[in-house]
Length: 210
Image 1 (cartoon, rainbow, N blue to C red):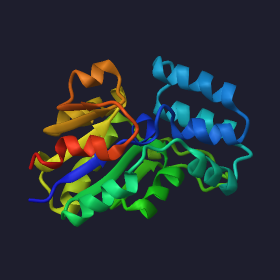
Image 2 (tube, one colour):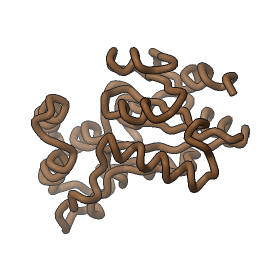
Image 3 (cartoon, one colour):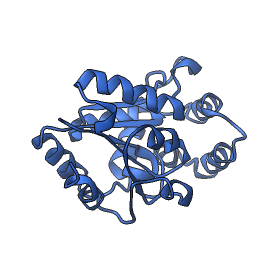
Image 4 (tube, rainbow, N blue to C red):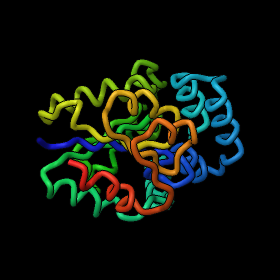
């Protein structure tokens, strides 16, 4: 039976940062995004409210800014190699993130079978954010279920990789999980834990356990 590997983006594939932080850095909005991130982590704003506020911050955002953020971000080493090995073994890999889909979907070119993020208007923005398209933690489980059906994989054959409480519900929904540079509360719930900057090492924890 094939397995489905589900990867979080912010803090997992990206080391110590998040896509909105890297995008905001391109616009010189480091202080503003840091304040918004604190509000989100503290629960003062939910996912749709965060999206509305970050879209306001990014009024001048262009595709060039997004490209600069993507190419300059501190990615873990070995992402392409890990996904190539997963593909060669007949398994599937997908990225499911709360970050904007226009950033997340760029990982399809690195070998992901699927990449899901919150749906923002096209860049440069001319439309408001539709709250219905913004993902939350529960949406990760729904997307995982959809991908299982699409790829013909059972929930029992899924592996989740994440770092924060936004991955909590997904970790609870699949039998195998890998906490990557994670919050201690998530580590306590994970099957495996990895600290470092090479995705190949995190994948090694589950590669042999078939």
